Length: 604
Picture 1 (cartoon, rainbow, N blue to C red):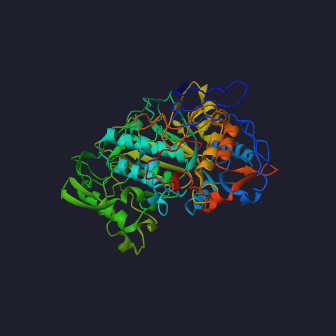
Picture 2: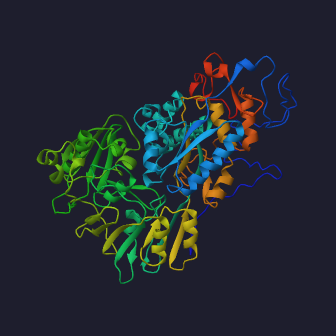
Picture 3: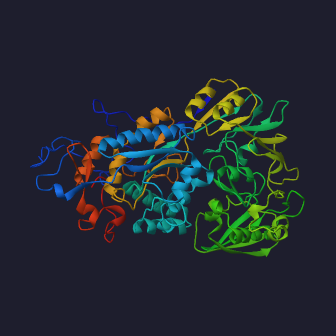
């Protein structure tokens, strides 16, 4: 059976032209520029008549142009790491090479790809943002990934710098009033849509499947973690003889140590053992969890009062001392994967047994919903003194850590590369569970994981590709769910390197993409076209009126011609030397004169 919650309307190709109609915002005259074919001739070069026709330099101007240093270095994703994005990057490469540029595409698995990402060793790089519930807040998507303060340490590896954007991002970060904050978030999306620091192409749907024969009460959460979350686990019940709830997964954490989290898999494994002050509901709202009340005293001072009666798994009371210890511990020893969440905390004071006061380095309106929902709270009496007692340099080196936690589940056993078995903490005060065991079963490939759910050997599977999803649609014992999601997939480009430092060039790349064709080919239609990181599924924060990018290769060629680019007789793109020498007019976007506002239009 299938539950398809698609709200997307497929765009139809213009008859006879193959050019897609505009995306959201196509009616905004101040956002887009219509291209009218001209009969102007290129005096001594090629004939420029006709939309999308490449033209050569005029006679006597050849010395004003030169080819780029090609091919450009494209760090791509391997087929076995993401079949759909592997397909998308090949479609994009073929499209962009029609503009007269070439790429050296190097597909690789995620670990080496991340190394190239964090070392800025790429011209173009295929990457995507997983749709965690906490990313419904625009902080991660728009602030952490595009503010210039994160070009050295953070997620702004594309080296995007725009002072106007920084100003808007700072405002939505420090504004606590939700409606006022929304105005700045809309402005930020508009700037990103115009500057295209990364070329966004789709927001994939969350594809998952759950056994409806032996289990009931499934409550999938928005995003990629449809079932592995407290909103669902507190609702689902096992109805058969087997009281184990088994996740069929292909992900495997390298280790389960809360001070050694190096990726999403380890974060997902530990969040069941350790408590979070805030958790996210199925419909995508953040609510206090271990926290009873969160009070913003001022922009940089926030009080968190814990619920009464909470205990660690060994029965010791869970208090504000544990909260303070955890934040101090993170800052002392560092867990880079979590640094964005604890980094803004300058210190924590214990006000009383249940109240911890957070002091932030600067106002941060995302702190309550995002930061507090991502940090595991450690039992002080377990971790205090571990480094000294065991002769360690860092608590991540604790080879056999005591994983006594305080969260909803206790860890029964962990078989690296095999399975993780949890049991509900019997004295847990915040929820009840309708099963006796929670199991993370690790499969070598997605086909095997999907088969386990089909054959009643597992309860659910999530983050699956369209081919796997199709297998589940006709299975009578499985509910297959396709939910629009808020993740984002992008082709990142180095904004400080020629020609990607020219916003007109980046706009041309965006215009060239046939996003609908990519979605239909790679995702079987199960995605929304993307211009910015904020997805339509993220309804409150999504700006539907950002500039549109349609018209395909023909429109892209027109944008390049308008910006002064030309082509040689072999169709190779030539750059106007003065545009990149600093002697010509300033490029748009991150090098524009911003004193009179941000008014340029897409395609100029």
